[in-house]
Amino acid sequence: MPEKMLVEDHIKKNKRDTLLICMLMIFLLFGLIFAIGYALGAPPIITAPIAIIVALAYIMITYSFSVQSVISAAGARPANPQIQTEKMLIYKVEEMAIAAGLPTPKAYVQDSKDINAFATGRKPEEAIICATTGALQQLNKEELEGVIGHEMSHIRNRDILVMTVTVGVVGAIALIAEIALRMLFFGGGSRGGDKKGGGGIIVVIIAIIFIVLAPIFSRLTYLAISRKREYLADADGAYLTRNPEGLAMALEKIKGDLPDDPKGSKTVAPLYIANPYKRALSDSIWSTHPPLDERIRRLRSM
Image (cartoon, rainbow, N blue to C red; front, top):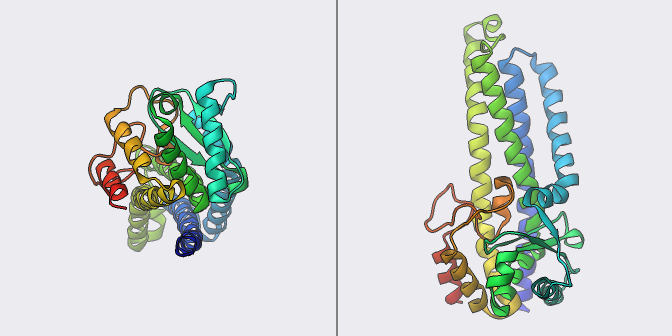
């Protein structure tokens, strides 16, 4: 019962966090578009409604196509039950779904030598768990179960929606900000500052500063949340499998398996159990994941 209450508390807290994060991302996207319009000289009365409409529309589009976008970006494919290692993946996903009391996610495979896995989906009924061929070939049953338990915990704790959608929004903020800065600095700067006088120029400068800082702040916010949720998924995954050592051993293999020709887009790197492009061996605010040594230590202290 205490474990069940703990999981339910995590789910409730994550739902609240998800709402707050979505509101923050909408605000940042709105503020970025508004700042660009103001810096370019557009009247605020016109820029504000356009900015909120564009921000909300982009969030909804990202939500609607999030799963397909992640699968495409990762180059993943459905698991083939005719292949023994992929049949084992399907079996382990079904087993962990029963343990978690969730609908069985679809099993996908990414053709990559890297030992890795990720989960995505808008809700548990539409969830997907994907493992690399490297993970299926190099992990034993106990270690693979630990990895699948970790990903199933992301689904059970309702991490997958906010992680999937936020990846797209953070990427959009960075792209829009880069385009805006190029327009402002290489296209002759603001046309509105001259008309607004000294005070207007100051506001334009503030708008430009916001354009510069928005992608940095949005990424830092997402990365901090991502690292925290990785620790939680490690712990809850260990409870699901009743075997913290399985995931700890898998993470040790991941630590020793340096990224080798990783597949897919860097935009979805934060979704994986470990960054497929750079292993997190030390604590950094720019890391997509917490340090592997610390994750292993926490698991073995359970």
